Structure formats: C-alpha cells, structure tokens
Length: 90
Image 1 (cartoon, rainbow, N blue to C red):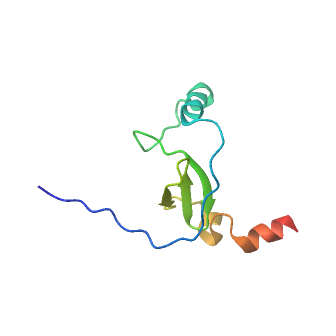
Image 2 (spheres, one colour):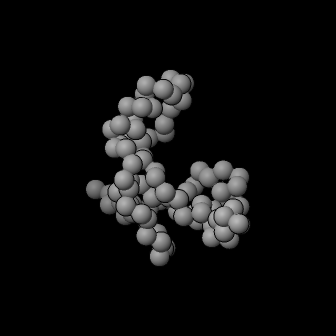
C-alpha cells in the first residue's frame, strides 16, 4: 500500500474574507445555463475560487491553493499586490 503525503504550503499571513456570495450550487447552475458548452473544467468537482492574494488563491471555504495557472499579469505581480492596488486606488 502506497502512502501519499500532501505537500505543505509555506506560511501565509493573509486571512481571506468570509465568503458571502452565491452558493457553489448556484454558481455551477449559472455556468451550466449561460456558459458555452465548449468550455470545460479540468476538475471532476470544480473549485470555487473566490479570492486571490499574491500567489495564493482561496476557495469559498477559505482553503488556500498555489496559483499555478496564472496569466501573464498575475505571474508578474500576483493577485491584489498592495503596491499595484494602491496605485489603482490613487
């Protein structure tokens, strides 16, 4: 029998806000109703990512993931980088 151990993520002090948006079921139903059927997910049970902070993504339960599929801008500065966010506010 093979034992699989989960990798341990480095520490992160960011605490995601409590999620108060639509339920996971409502989001999936909306996607089914309006998204092009040619779009697909790579997971049998898709993630419900609701917040990003630098290189981290958080799901609706607060679980943290490393964003390994980021786009060009996200790779450059991460999600919600404080310096970029401040400049946008200005």
